[in-house]
Length: 266
Image 1 (tube, rainbow, N blue to C red):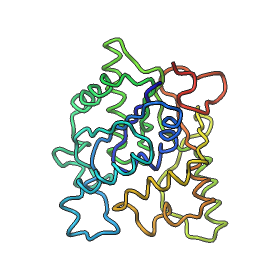
Image 2: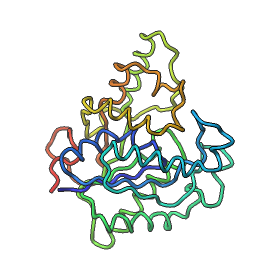
Image 3: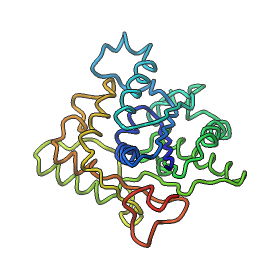
Image 4: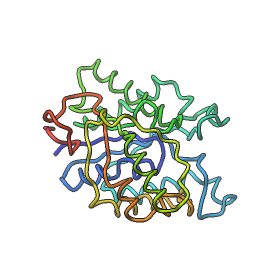
């Protein structure tokens, strides 16, 4: 049995981007560990009263995450203990206690402590741009890299270190599918990376519906008008039926692109 450890910024990020590989690892009998930097306190609120829920949003989203992790097969979930920084450019980016404002050595030290306990064979986080530029996603990348550098100095490193990435070709294909559907295209600020940089493509089409259920567990974040909610099954499968990654540390299992993050591990 190997351990897959993922570092995410907020509750719901895990379901949207890496839910498939988490479920796939669980199905194969591996241990799945999720580290979430914040509790999503600054996010928009849907499907519940704003005034009543805002003061206890961290509590609400912690419980939503617990439900999602049950669906995703997570064995252990931990928070780094920082506050949501909010979207790029907001004043909340500068709030004391926010993840964005956390000293990098401190954040890396907290994460390194968890990694020491688990000694995962595979670690996953975001690309340097945080996929779409969110300060907390970028900080998650920086924190993970710094934590692994700290541990490397102690003589340990995971067998593989992956960055979840969105291929540019996928974004172009999705834009075409939206045009064909006749629906207004969603305002998603993701450019993606060149397709040739992708080193692993994991087919999770058989898990797409369960992945959608895990996202739905984050009820307070489910905008009824969101493309995640309104897109048809075929478009959803096109968008989320595969997950793509870039190997940032370790060796590829074979010369060709990988189909499983735990391929060749152990």
